[in-house]
Image (cartoon, rainbow, N blue to C red; front, top):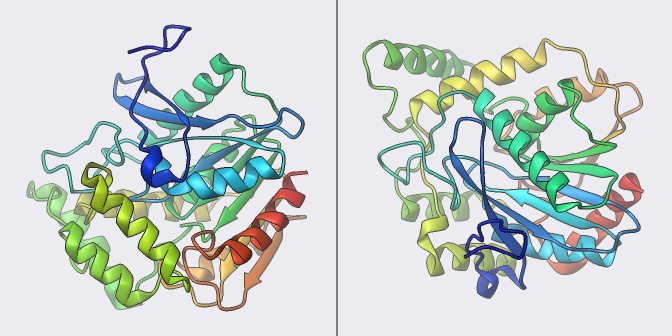
Length: 312
């Protein structure tokens, strides 16, 4: 099916997202099929482009989009290649994989073109989480058309012990030479069940209801899920975060939220970047974990008030 303008419609699971949204199939420059989703909102304050993290998908941000709509913003997002309902880049659909992190920039360019075609109102604001923060920072350095940016727990470095980091570089590099870079990264969950158990054990959020809500989404629609990244994905992530760390900060208003109980991304890299970003604000969230917006309504609302004020 297609909408009135001839755009091919894509599925969106409103039953688990907390409400409806418009979803379309779009194509990246290399022809890969991606799912783009937008939530119409008031035209007064612009549109927020949500750049999601690894393993994430549009439905997970249904509550955030509704909260931002109440604050005057429309929202748009996409499933990155290799996750959600976008084309998977590996023979095993549960394996997180990408040929190059540069491919994610092609995905974002496709979303920006789609947003322009839809005529969604500007200005455009970036809300980028975890891996989306890595992709978003690179995009800002390319001077993409964002008026402001907000990052939550951005993946500007992958958290691991120094000895493990050396091993990760060596193993991920060697795997490419011997044709084994498709294998799952060691220490990462290889199945959806293991991924769920690991997330629960590490407490990504303080709110059990919100965590259960996200788990129920994948239980109801397992095609949304993703498990361990490949060794090649790990190698590309290490390369891209190292390359970004060596570059100066872009000239754009920036707010970054980082929990003081962060365990997924490298907090030291985040602090270093923010020290080198003139005029940017770093807010350390007391008791905050990795999923700073997957929280109870009051906590999420307070954080989105802060973000909306920054966008405004």
